[in-house]
Length: 75
Image (cartoon, rainbow, N blue to C red; front, side, top):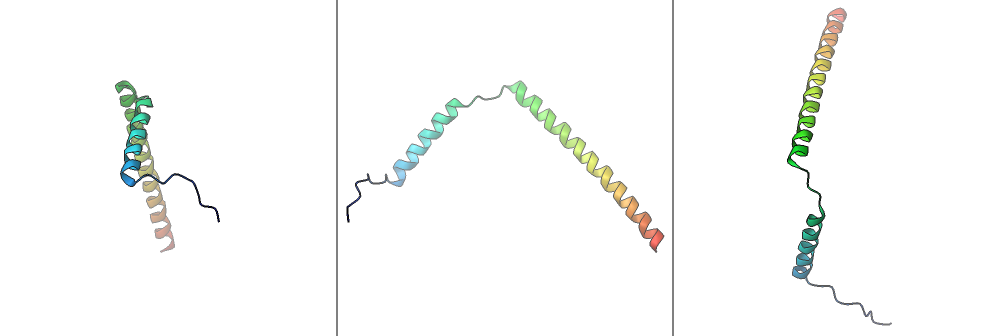
């Protein structure tokens, strides 16, 4: 059997330091949104959330009303 000539794996501290270096390099590449973009995106999320809350409330109320009517008819 031939012995493997691969380099030994670095210890956990060296791998962690390398990982942090990679993270730092990646964060320098990120294109961060402007304040205006964040505010606009947040408003879109809040309006969408309000719409779906209202929609769910209306559908739930109608469903309860219909089921109550069916219960009265059958009972």
